[in-house]
Length: 419
Image (cartoon, rainbow, N blue to C red):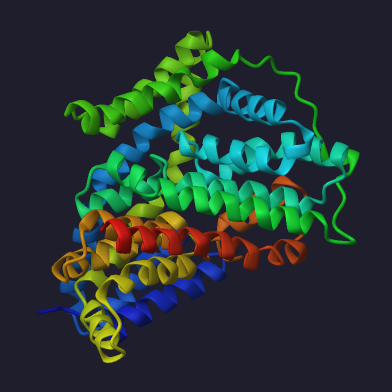
């Protein structure tokens, strides 16, 4: 029934976590953990290597789509479109609604295809300028951005969503729409918690040295949103008109439209190269993720987990959010966590009668709970965006987890109510 023991799979994952914490590249950590876990799990060297290769091969369709999505991400960032969208939202909502505007801006930037860490980095200069003017502490500003980013991430055509949709064999657009309600709940939680933090005494003040003035000319708002709007329309054609346009086509088309509309056609080569540089890392990470996902998927772990749930009289669907939470926490990555959880437990969840779309949505939402632990890059990238030290950055983790838990609870509730 299975090639590896549960102990082997767990040992392999623990080794990978230890190596990631020790600053070994996550892809190498996951590959080495898969190799050791497979051998300890009783599969033998040949079976272990073959399973690792098979697991990595299973990620290729996701990797290809993610690589082409880099054109859109690069276009939004390098043409200034992402910054323009963020600035417009903040300006329109005004200083009184500053934290809500910052959260919504980050949510939208992430939702249209910019990675969550890049979304925070993009909005950070605007947030800091607003924060200094409105006397808002850095903690509240960063939480608003991270919370908004988490909300946008579960309804985005980003690597984590692509990987989850591939693992369950569900339409990407449908998965994006499935978590709209959880995303709105997460956004509300982020705004509420950021507002509470803004009243905290002795908060970290924004200094003038934290703000870098940008002299780059930004495109007009209609031109800035043209690319993302095109992607939304193309992906929406399947549920609306029955015309299926693969993200592999829709995402780069949106990027090219963004480049053309903002008058940057002469810069198309450096812009696309920049976009590729932003997705190479996550593509390599997914290949490493595929190796350990292959070992875990071929182990007895999923059967033992189901048996444990049955012993405690817990329904099978609980496995979906739980797997997302645990795997994302282990890897400190939404993408890696959602991928491993989806690749491992998709067959088991669907066999237990949980609809594939609902299971993918719950795993995806669960992967946003503890995905920002210090052994991952998101923790450091977001802290650095507002010049926050590690100690202060760690104090935000419980608040971030509450935002992710809100999204997860809402996703589970949506399954229970709507199926």
